[in-house]
Image (cartoon, rainbow, N blue to C red; front, side, top):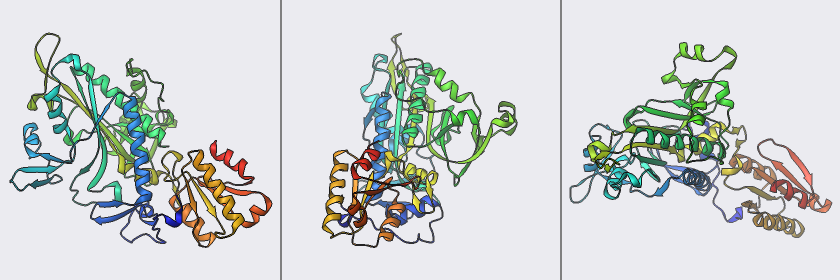
Amino acid sequence: MRLSRYFMPTLRDAPSDAQIVSHQLMLRAGMVRQEAAGIYAWLPMGLRVLKKIEQIVREEMDRAGAIEVLLPTLQLADLWRESGRYDDYGDEMLRIKDRHDRDLLYGPTAEEVITEIFRAYVKSYKDLPKNFYNIQWKFRDERRPRFGVMRGREFLMKDAYSFDIDEAAARRSYNRMFLAYLNIYARLGLKAIPVKADPGPIGGDLSHEFIILADTGESEVFAHKDLVEMGAPGPDIDWDGDLEPMVAQRTRLYAASDEMHDQARFEAEAPADKRMTARGIEVGHIFYFGEKYSRPMKALVTGPDGKDAPIHGGSYGVGVSRLVGGIIEASHDEAGIIWPDAVAPFGVAVVNLRPGNAEVDAVAEQAYAALTGLSKDPLLDDRDDRPGAKFASLDLVGIPWQLIVGPKGVADGVVELKRRATGERQTLPLDAALKVIAG
């Protein structure tokens, strides 16, 4: 992509109503534009990040055995009446009538829809377990939408739903999602802490939130340091094996957000030198809720004893659009965003300091072509602008590498390479710089 032909409307200053860092930087970097309270248009730079996060989530769901579907944004109110949630959900639900006076709603979540699909097709325990996931826009009519995409009304969420014959099997499905979530956040360059959570309106008696550490986080987190330092399980998991030991290893150590925190328990379960208190942001929530939806909605399967019984369910949400803001909150500096390589909008910016100079143009084009061949997703900054303005805008949008081509370097047979995360600069021949970027 050539920046002279691209659309990257950066701002020098953030609007005055942008209260938190991620909101300020997303607006300044031209990632989103607010269209209404809590509703954003995703501009090209923001959309590229959103799609990369979405793809990582998709790959880890597939790896854990979940099956992707795409559910409608508008749902029939009658399904929610079956489950008993239509009147209970409250004012956050956007209720709609169509031209035939039928009651619809803009889905805030999709337990009812997926349960209706399941009960229509699955009749026997022999077809279990099943786990369906859906990456789709949701809507919750927040009373006070704020903090940009961190607490918007319209948001992109990955929601998965497991169906099992009994509680023991359902807990095995829960464990798969628990570990898959840790892998998702690790691939996004985040350190996520699983904490015991309140199930809220979803229901159930087993629930965990996943919180990433950020100085500007909305929640206070209390955790055993060993849990914080424990790595993700990684891709080499036997998903059909016994996952309970890996989950138990991560749930037996104390971890709680402020709303569930018990100071006496914290002090009893974590030695003084192992107690950590920090700020954090919730970016995922998983639930086991048993027969909460299957019983009223009659989602039954025939068991091995020949009798029909309601399935045991769970749901598992990742805030995909929320993660864009969460990553920025966890990774930025005074100059702008510092994207982890896996989700950066572009991998490398080739900065042409003298567009129109034949020698500089030739080296910049050579670098751009080589990086394209290496699948490094390069952006060629061929704008006719001052070097300082170019560097400032590229630092702001957070592209991980800058490969800088100028007349003096070209004359000396070298380019300059800058790593955004550390600020480290190297002067190298082009081939050597390409090898550094290639890893």
